[in-house]
Length: 332
Image 1 (cartoon, rainbow, N blue to C red):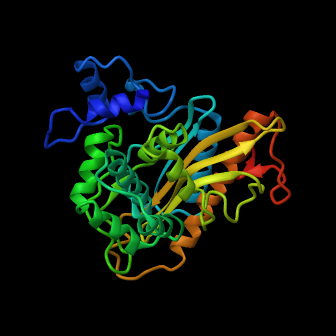
Image 2 (cartoon, rainbow, N blue to C red; image 1 turned 120 degrees about the vertical axis):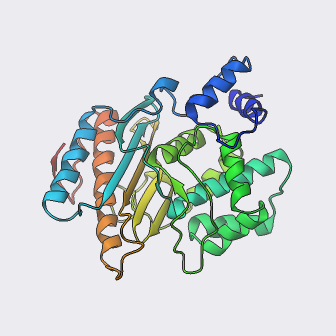
């Protein structure tokens, strides 16, 4: 049995509670039950550091400056809030942590957790994968189909049951809540997650610590429209496993991007960006430019992160033809 299976097996036997366990309680529960192993939600981060914000890295400072300049220039409103988490998987090091533990509207990023809940039940023998579920998985992740998402929520017993599967078995997802199916028209505002939880999801996925990680990677790697790679200056050949989320008031993208050096070695990193304006869902009118403009901000941040990671692992800046080495508002 793998170490993560050991932990999740122990977690399934933690006492039931009306207050779901959080990251620190999860660790304490394991210790109390005599667990001798612990797979950290993010490799290299101790339990005491899990809830920390701010890592004081050059990249974090550049993103902070970029966001401040956007506000000064009026491209981000005072009501726009942003969360960013970036994690260098090979080095086991978090390099950006900006408002990462703030619970935000999940929009379609909640589909990552719905897929996880389904595969958890498949591994437990309570559900079976077949042609129908495979078709709905592809539609849910690649096409972000809401009807397919609701199909799985119903299949698993409703929103509260899906939420319980995640909360009771994956105690490190502190800010994730699944409380509603996706309404007609796609205006889902009540499901919640954070850039930290999304970062943990993709780290655990990349390290094959989630049930049927290989199958989930398959769906997340399918060609799709996103903001981390699609329509950016990031070069062809970089693999991406990702899911975006969009609703009026929330634009988010989360995933793992994988660059390869001249020797063929993979250099994966997790990037998770959420821009939220809580005033938008209840506003009288709809600014049709709000989503596209925030989408371009996420693309710019992703380009800057790629430049930083390229410099870190390749030993030289990424001088793309489009920007000639200028990312996040200047040379990195």
